[in-house]
Length: 206
Image 1: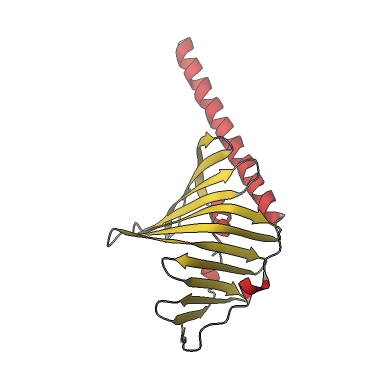
Image 2: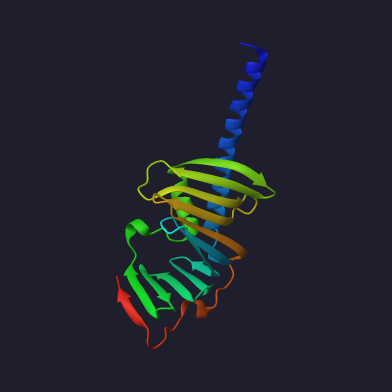
């Protein structure tokens, strides 16, 4: 075997080794960061791509999360509010003046975007594909999942915070979240949790 071939093999082995170390270190940073967070709030942009109609709908708003409860409140294109607390899910849509209410199903218990990433990390092949400044780009391919076929994320490897997350389902539909203005362990106003629905709202139990 020539020296060139030996150098190529050595380089590939070193690359794979460094990548593996990078994955483990990045996951630990992610786990440590969110394990020490008592509250999380940020501006969020959510893009939903519907493969069947080849259309993307974008929502802009804010996300708030503490242990056991979460609110995502969108102001654009119309007001929507998702509240998860005490095992119940309320989704209020202002355009239809309807609250869709359901009990959280165990299989859908990971609705916080970051929890979704943590949940799938150990069940996927993980590639840390590129770094730009403090940001690592990550791609996850679930080994066996009936719904999710791919997840992508941008993680700040200094802070361990997720700045964007997206996932694609088996039908080609995609959902992506981008976070900005992240605040951790800061007081969340009581008004975030204590929302009063309009008097003429209809409630649909699912």
